[in-house]
Length: 274
Image 1 (cartoon, rainbow, N blue to C red):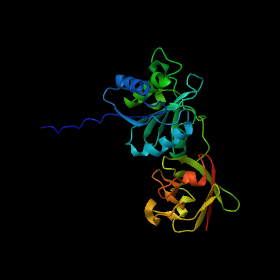
Image 2 (image 1 turned 30 degrees about the vertical axis):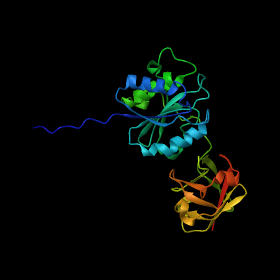
Image 3 (image 1 turned 120 degrees about the vertical axis):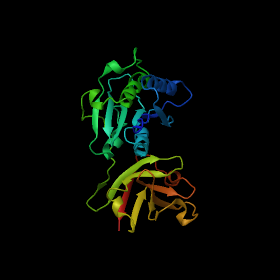
Image 4 (image 1 turned 135 degrees about the vertical axis):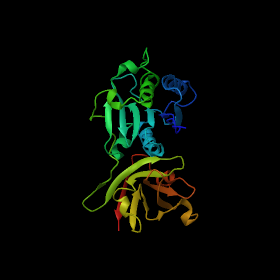
């Protein structure tokens, strides 16, 4: 008997939007994808990104994309410029594929994935007709995501570009005194403050076993924990911890570090070693 061959697994398409779930928007996007790529596995990352908050969506996409297998298509639509001249783009990065408006939403992934390729989507024959000026998540981005899911290469969707919209750099900078300067990248629902100090880059690679002083707002953090409860309960005590997204977080035991420090996303943080 000839050996049986395994069929290829169905393509995976993730969806990340600020659409919420009270309206028909998410269902319409899914319907277009399934109409063009029957059998696709659709995964909702979240549809509760704060309205129009591109940076929040960019962090979420950065934090989640490496959890998916190679070849996954990530459709991300947080699009305050919908209907304007902003470009739809598709990217190949880290063995995965991405579709989004060109407003910075993909930039954190592109900063962290070497060898990324970005294309301006000009293959308008893929778009739904008529194309709504107010719902291009359904009429532009969903068809492009479906095309990628069935095997279309990003290079077949339009020309390569290098001038895509960028967000502030993730990589911290060091000053003449050796102090590293970063920022708060994200504040999660528990009040943990995710900083731009990455575990796999300096100064994060040199942090273990060394004394340090991390300044967040008016507070100083000098303790690095391996897990949240490592030091027991200590009201209002702040500590640093390596979060699951690979960045250094400022946390508090069963409390909100954001509340205790008064910081918000984008605020400066500083790290002095030794």
